[in-house]
Length: 58
Image 1: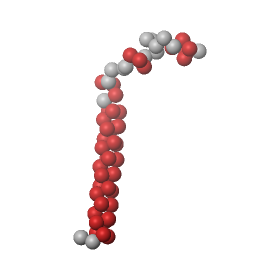
Image 2: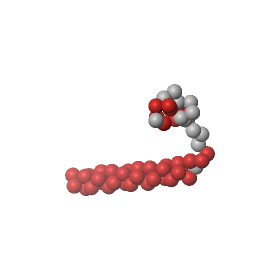
Image 3: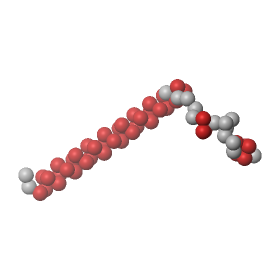
Image 4: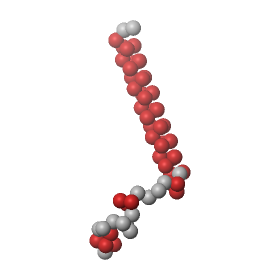
């Protein structure tokens, strides 16, 4: 294998990995959107339990 073929091979692998990364990221966010109602709300995010919620509301 010469240098050019080696670079083309590595470039192809990088492109394949990039596409896989993008596809899995999209699937992850679609899953989050589809099952959002099943996730419990974190306590630190709730305005009812946040001690600074009075400052946020005004």
